[in-house]
Image 1: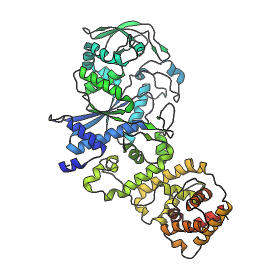
Image 2: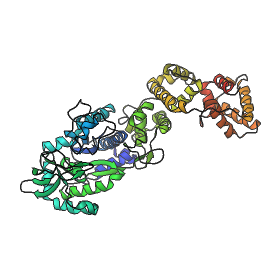
Image 3: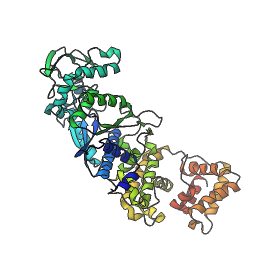
Image 4: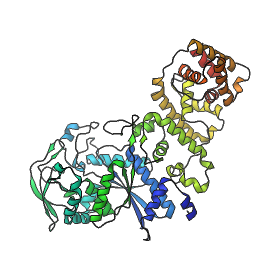
Length: 529
């Protein structure tokens, strides 16, 4: 990519990629830039996991495009984190309850198919990321600590523990400061990791003394006292120090995190400097909100899940939603899928018109692997149109092939886009059956509305009405409403409520052209008379 094109690119991934390049100043760029994303394997991957990896991927791809350099994403899983409580959606709860407080990598798999609890969840993470074609290298805390990846950093942290304490203790509540340590030794007696309390540091032997007498949620320590090396998995670091340890040990250059982690990122960056390293560039993103504007929570179960979105729309539409304004809080709930899907399809239609030197700023360029696999789609048929067609045709068991055949009458060229079309129909029908059909409430037309409906029916039965274009069909509604002394907007509402059983609906002209004038006449006869 030439310099002039680089300077024109304004989308946020390119701005972030330019930050990465500029952060080295006059220094030569490293042979490989390392991006990192984090994952807690106490539960299954979710929509936030997808969002963070997708956004990081877009910045990485923008970096490669700008300078042609090499880059890699490390997907890091903290499987040494302790299990705080038994998840409500997992089997073998009694077995899991016996292992509370232990590292996730030391707990048996409740499903009985993998070597550990975290092994199962990390396997799900890998399947999840592979499904969407992400390029990444998977690493885990258990492997990193036990293999010695972190040993150099652990020695430095032990030597400079007083500096770390001076930095972190003032940020804690006063009642939590006494006895706090960044080191979390694993109890040799009970195997728990968050119930141990460091009682002495031994820099000469690279060890810590500890007593297992703390509490971790409802879990009590066993009372054992001992001494352990902090190297090779004998101890792990607490969250903010652990984050800094990863950055330092792997030389991470860039990481994203939620807005709620800004204070943690700031502290972790300062700890990296204490260790003599260079903290990575950070980028915070806003949280997803549910329909009520409240933060989405896995435990609460509000908002929309990954499975729900993919049941009603392809992953590319979700990627499009996530791409837009990462620093703006966005409501994420099931019933905004149609709008997002239609916006995504509109971008597909316009993509061929985008000049070559501006395509890299288009969301589709990022979503579809640097523009390498943007599907062709030039049809006016969208998600809402499919829902309206199924609704108007009154199909109890919609058949995708018949819907496609019907849409061909509306757009004779639509068969050219069969791949996009059939996905659109499949997902649109699923959304209609699950979200629209159960909520339909038809009302009877008032006496005044009935007269206007019959006038509209008469107009539609006139010779040549079946050949009218959308604008002409739309004008008919205005004409008959005004002739009947009714506000056209009120009559449009009546059309939706009486004929379709919905509070809102499509423009009448496009709807009538889609389903056909004879079908509109049938609906009026069925619902009005």
